[in-house]
Image 1 (tube, rainbow, N blue to C red):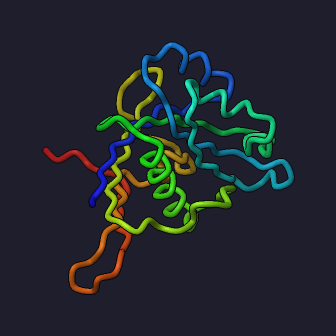
Image 2: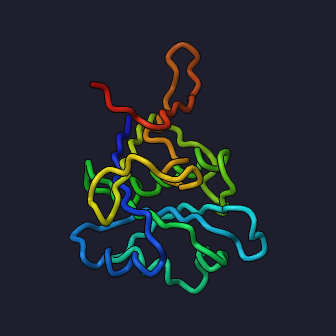
Length: 176
């Protein structure tokens, strides 16, 4: 069975902005992206992709053993929610797996799990929304995780070869 997910990402946040904004929303956020500098490697940007299945995603970020504590400096945080369906636990895990599978080859990812692709067709569409303006982010810095993550990630079985392949579209463009 094919799965289709539309994830709306809000950001880019600084650590101190996330909780207050999240509390003001009526949406449950269950995915997050973090970029920053690791404590011992201050010249290189590292990334972490995670899921949270609590009332507030920021409760997960406050866990004592969370990867966020490995950063000496946080560049940005994006928080996401699946908007095209009511996400169940397996959906959140599958979307996280798609994101980490793609990004593991692209950046310095701190995740140590989910680096293998799923065994079914999955279509993932990412929307990037500026949290202050509540409008689409059209321009992000080159090193922003919102700029590095494709707008579309598709993982599907090729009919002719019976092999799964990964397809991406970096940034969708408006046609006129």
